[in-house]
Amino acid sequence: MRLRVDRFDLATRVAGLESDYEIADALGVHRSTVGRVLADELRPGPVFIAGALSAFRMMSFADLFEVVEDR
View 1 (cartoon, one colour):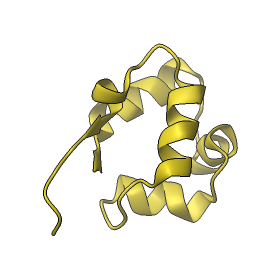
View 2 (tube, helix red, strand yellow):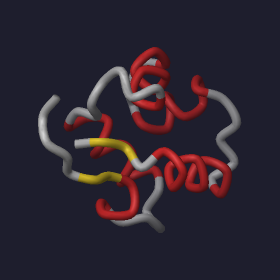
View 3 (cartoon, one colour):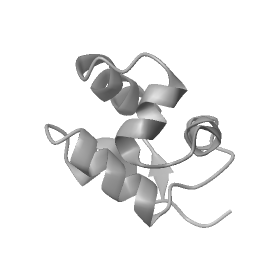
């Protein structure tokens, strides 16, 4: 699973979230998790995915995430 960073960035701007702290609070995850997922250092887990879909209701799963092979 990989985050579609360009679409995620669009969703955060539309939602008015300007920092990793605000994004993390909206998703219910730690700020470092947001940074690591955005940097593709960490795959988004269930809490991140659920938080993103809840926070950005205008976006679908396919809008925000793509299924990829394990590294």
